[in-house]
Length: 326
Image 1 (spheres, rainbow, N blue to C red):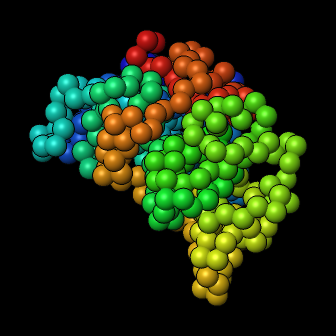
Image 2: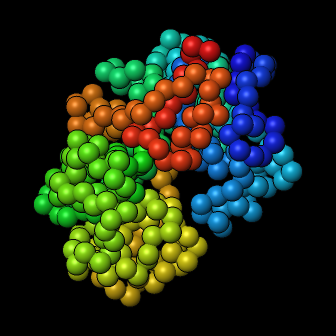
C-alpha cells in the first residue's frame, strides 16, 4: 500500500510517499480502507517534534522516537470503508462507511489501517462526503467535550478565542445549538466565516485586544496556548467557566486553585474522544445543526503543502488529505 511517511523530524518537506506492507487485522480488529484524513496541528507538531504546549515534549519524544520517528505514518482522524474484520468483531462489518480516531496508533495517512473495534469508529454521516467526515472528529469531539462540561444555558454569553480553527469552528456551531450568544475572536481574514457559522459578534485580534474591551462573559473557551490566564478569568461573570483547550503547565496548576477558591470553574480536562460523543456529532450533522467546514483537499503527493498551510494558519476551515485518489 501507499502511505505518506516521514523518516526524520523536520519541515513539511520531510513528508513523502512510500510503499508499506498492507496490514492484517487481528481477531479484535478491523481493516479500514482510508478515504481521507485530516491534516492537523498535532500532525505537524509530531512531524517537527516541537509542541505548542511545551511540557508535552519529553513524553511525546519518548513515544515517537528520540533521534528519529518510530511511527512513520501520521494521521489521527480519518474516514473510510471497512474492508475486513477479525473473527471476534461483532459491532462493525465489511462495507461499513465509517469515520473516527486512530488514537496513538496514528496511521491515517496510509491507504489501509487496522484498529481495534473498541476504538472510536462509528458510521459516517450519510449527508457528507468522506473528506467532510474526516474533518469532524478532531474539532467536533474537542468542542463538544468542553462545551458539555460548561453546561451552557440558553442566553448565556460565550467567548471563543481562536475561533477560526477546527475546534473553534465547531465550538461556534455547537454553542449556538445550545442557545448561546457567541463572541468569536480571530484574525481579519476569518471574521466573515465566523459570522456564517453563527457568531453573533466577532473581534479581530490584530486590531483589538479583547481583554481590554470591558466585556464580560459566562463562558470563555480558548484554543490559543499562550492565552492570558488572569485576564480571561477577570472577564468572567460570577459562576463563569473557563475552558482551556491547549493548557500550559502553569494554566493547569492555576486552574485547580481557581476552581477551589473562587466561584469560577477552570477546566483543562482533555477530550476522551468517546464513540458515543462521535455518534452525537453524527446525529447533529444529519439533523443539520452543525457541519464540517473544509478549506481545501490535497492529494497524498501534496501532503507537505497541506502541512505548510496548517502551520501558517492561512486557511478558512479544515485541511484534508485525500487518500482514496492516490
